[in-house]
Length: 213
Image 1 (tube, one colour):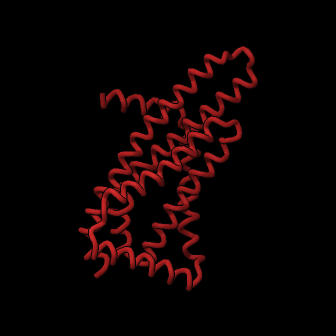
Image 2 (cartoon, helix red, strand yellow):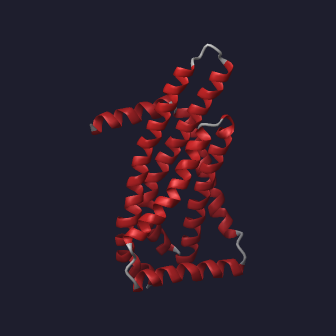
Image 3 (tube, one colour):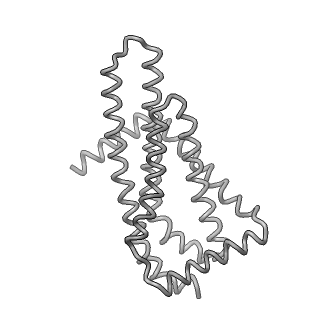
């Protein structure tokens, strides 16, 4: 079963390699823009964000974080993005907005990483490695995959408008496949959500004495 899923994903990436490459470039551009934006913050903004972050670390150190609450927040955050990507995929004009959403997600990652490194220095790299990277390496690839899936279905809709002999049944079949593929990728994103809610808090508690010393 695992090998079949792996082969299916490999074929999907191979058949859509150009779209994956472009979305990955957009994500990387977003990360770069987010990291550079940190340098443009005013002193007051830096202090406010630094105080907020330090308060978060102190709260995490002094209280037991409820994994259930973290799970709810993470599900809500990622569900919004998943639904937005799905909706954009079923609209003709959704393709450019898919690129925008992936770019914004990259911006958030870049800004968060850049700010943490600026605040904690080299210790920030350690914090990112354990507190941010584990979920990102699971969630981001499948968000990009979902973006590619949406682009493909949008193109199918455009083709159905321009090619009259393309039957409605064919479009319905493609729509069903689009929804099933979205659910498939969402399952992997949910794995990243579980990592964020139940594993990352453990990592943070382990490294917290190192980054706050």
